[in-house]
Each structure stands twice: as structure tokens, then as C-alpha cells.
Amino acid sequence: MIWVNGRTDVDMEEVRPIIWNGTTLYLLDQRLLPEEEVYIPCKNQKDVAESIRNMVVRGAPAIGIAAAYGMVLAVRKADDQGQRNVLTDSIAEKLQEAALLLKETRPTAVNLAWAVERILKKAGTLDGEKPEVMQRELEAEANKMFQEDIEVNKRIGTWGAELIQDGSTVLTHCNAGALATAGYGTALGVIRSAFAQGKDIRIFADETRPFLQGSRLTVWELQKEGIPVTLIVDSAAGYYLNKKIINCVVVGADRVAANGDTANKIGTYSLAVLARENNIPFYVAVPFSTFDFTIETGNDIIVEERESREITHLKDTTLTVPGISVGNPAFDLTPVSLISAFITEHGVIHAPNREKIRAMAHRGGSEVAGH
Ligand code: MRU
Image (cartoon, rainbow, N blue to C red; front, side, top):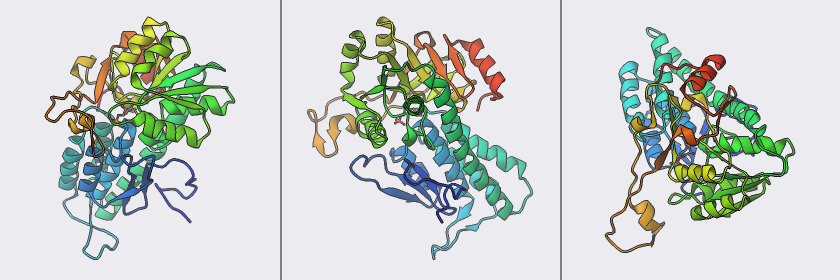
């Protein structure tokens, strides 16, 4: 019997970026896809932090869930024989240290802080409990977050599918699929849901330079399920949008400010401008765990700058002249005015603004206090 993420009814045919077996966290190494499917075992919070920083695991919800399991690992101490881990006494201290370590790995996706804080909050309710109880309860909380993420994505998918016309062509950017979440995906969840309803849809995925989440990950996921997909270079999007060959754009998000300004993979803003210019709807599929109500606008979102080698090299091949100065922001900011709608787990927010976002959060019971 296979037992993963707290469940036994697991379909291992599905894309599974995060597997927890009760003692070890296994992360599908997304740097090697699509050529190789290799899982990296993480035995402690440092392994998890390293895997987030190095993009073994990526995508806002996925790094949040991985960090939650990193917190669970932090309250264990592996013994030398590699037997089942034993607990240490100073749990609160260990959790605080792990929280700091995990939160600083990637600055833009708010799901990371959200997930770590949720585990800390749970730990706070267990003050005075025996270590075994604390460990069991935190593990149960991480498993719950994992399952909730999949359910939330399915709800996003159901709402979003209503916006996808039969016979239409949808452009997506980066990878906001099963690989970027606990499973099913946000933007790709919308696409999966529309396809499952029998709609005749075609997807355009752009490459998403420099990490190539589009050409390596999104097309891999879609092809596995037989969803028709065409790969284009990032700079071809304008051509297809202008020709009306693409009928709508659906992307994910890494952090959404209280007013709706959205940080997502670099290139998202350009697509939003192109979509507006060509009168094509631009949708952001996003769970409420990605909203950051502590910041008013996108100006307060920290954009991660990644190393120049991602741009100057493709694996070991040099792509440019030595010593060239490189700019590599991993994300950009799309003003809310360019977003036609947010597709959330509670419903669709058309022509979004601060008030409509808050109203939807309240209606669905999501917290608006911030993380
Ligand atoms: O740098 P990445 O690959 O972690 O960036 C991922 C994205 O920008 C996704 O669009 C976003 O996290 C949403 S994933 C559901």
C-alpha cells in the first residue's frame, strides 16, 4: 500500500512534485524535466531550503507546501543510523530558526511565508503538549495544507472553466500547473477543467526564458494528458494575440497586493499590455493564499533578482560573450487595471479592485489580515 501526504488513495500516475512519506520529503527535481524524472530526498529543513533556492521545487503554492514539510522536518532530529527520527526538546526554537531559513529562500512568492506562518500558528496552539503530539499534529497540518491546495485548485478550475469558450485558444505563461502546486494547478487547473468538460481548446505555451518553465514543464504536463498544446517563443505572443489566434490569456501569480497589483513570472506584464492592446481578456488564476493584504500596491512587492548564469548559459553551453552585464528579475508587476478577472477558489472577480477582492475574501471566509 502506498502512503503519501497522509493518504493511501493516491494515484501515482498524476504529476506529483511533492511526496511526504512520514519521515522524508521527496521533491521532483524540476531542473531535470522533461528529460529525467528524479526525486531529491530532503531529510531536514536545510535540504528543503536548498531545494527551494535552487528551483528543484518552484511555483508559489508548491514552495509553500514544501516549506510546511520543512518545518515538520525541523522538529525532528535524524539519528546516525538513519532510523526513524527522534524529537528534540527545544521545538519552539527550532521552528523559529527553520521559519527564518525557509522564508528567506525566495522573496516574492507570499505562499512561502503564508505556509510557514500557518505551521507556527498551529504550533502555538500546541504549547505545553508532549513532543510526540506536537510532531504528529504539525505533520497532520502540513498534510492538510497539501490536500487543501489540490481542492482549492480544483475549485479555481471549475470557476475558471466557465470563462473558457468552446473552440478557443488559450495562452499561458511560465508553469502554473500541477508542478507549481500540490497538484492540478491554478492556470493549468482552469485549462484541465475546461478540457475535462469536453471543450475543444488549444493551448499556446510560451517558452518562458530563462528557466524555460513553459517549454520544459507546461508542455510536458499538458502533453501527458493529451491536451493540445503549441510551443511558441516568448516574443511570438504579440503576433498571435494581434492575429486573434489567441482568444484569452491565463496565468498564475506569486503575490497579489490588496489593490490587485500582481507579481508573476517575468514577461507577464508584457503579455497583459499586449492583451489589452488587442482587446483580449487577461485572467489571473490565484488562490487566496497568494493575496498579501499587508501591502496596498504592487510597489511594495520585492522582486527576486536571480543569478546571471541562468541567462548567459543553457546547461553548460555559453550563450553570450564572457563578462556581459546581465539583468535577471525573476518576476514583474502587472497593474490591476490590466487584469480582466481574478479566478479564485471562491469565485471570479471581474474588473477587480481592492473592495471587490475584500468582498470575495469575506464571502469565502478567507482571512484578510495578511500573513
Ligand atoms: O520562478 P518560479 O518558477 O517559481 O515562478 C513561478 C510563477 O511565476 C508561477 O506563475 C506562480 O508561482 C504561480 S504557480 C501556481
